[in-house]
Length: 416
Image (cartoon, rainbow, N blue to C red; front, side, top):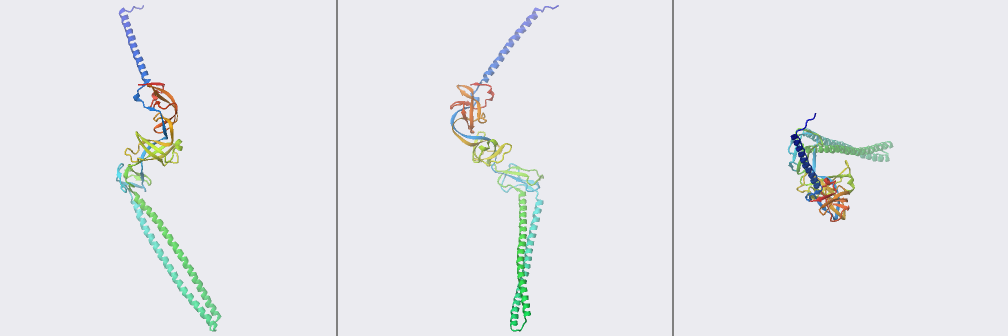
């Protein structure tokens, strides 16, 4: 059997329900107010938070965008000319170095020994060449002496032949004796001719032999000069007055021939190493004007040294700066590079900004009478300053050129 609830308890429950309804209504009003305020705020924007651009008519220097990096105008990598190890380090990265100033020292014992040995071999080869020349001269001198003796003998036989012919004519000699003397004369003449030919051959052989030895000496001297160059290069010196931007300072470490051990850079003048997508290859040419932007700073430059090959869809090129010694330039700074490839006159244009990513149709906010309305506008080519408007916007109209991505679901905004 149910018991009746006391009146006092019923009154307390009734008051509790009234309080719940009261506070719930207040909370609901607050939530509705917040939603309304947020919705109102999202449908409006402060003028100080936006950038406006006004459409005008003028000229556009059409550009393509590339990315770049500031690098020293001249930079030289020093490599180890020999297999060796580092004995001493005289300079650290960041130090200034003068031309021919030592940077580090490599172990040179083996190459110095080899060089001294080659010097001794060179002197030995010179001595052998002189010895060979003296021997050949003596041999030719002996043959020349024999030639003179045979020439005298032939003239003697020629006189004897004349005498025998005379005696035979007066009956004091015989025909057999005349023929014998004549035969001896002919033999002597042939021997003289043969000796002359032998001397000529010996001279040619001597000249050829001397030439071969001189060539051998010349080749060896070139090898010696290469050893001298290696010995000089192994004394690691700075090739120019510059700043040492890298040095292998691990004393005792082994280095192989061709290993990079130091880099010296001229940090007083710079250039830009840039890269661009290969799809823009036709719009890139040597000698083209380029604009370099580093923050708010702009520098003029000229495109040079376009690489003929494409790597990972990218073409590399260099921009030489007119103000290469600008004091605000620093090695490694990232830059935006704008390369000019054409000019369009008398076009409707608006300021360039982050909203532009290439020719096409855009939804931009057009400002009029304190309100901003989203409108489809077709944009064409661009420069680093302006974007061409092909349709959807008239001269004198203003558009918002700052980032409006948070309002992409809105169609109109009130500008406060």
